[in-house]
Image: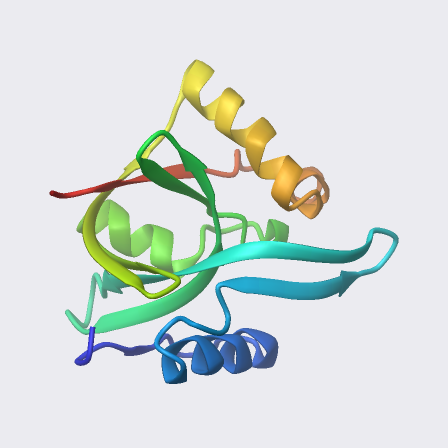
Length: 153
């Protein structure tokens, strides 16, 4: 992941979190504590997703909350309920081969968008670790994608 760089235009809290994660090799930053209005303090697992830019070809790192499903990880392309998909999601649609760091563990993986029963099941699991996803879905007309990251062994 050394040639990758933090994605441009990340909010300050994401930049701080990603820098802490990277500088500690994943020892600090895997579990992210945050105070959420009307929900109190949440501790959420976070990973670092590295995608290849669909236009630039450069590698970009995004800190994202995640869940697990079997031997795979899953993430949610919420962008806080914005009307358009996040850049990392558009990148994986163009090139689903990604890198993932979970804590101190790094791996190559392949990203795929879920549908139907699988999406519904994982969406419910996502609401358990990050309840604000429900609020984000109410803010946008697009169905927020749930993306599975299947490690490549």
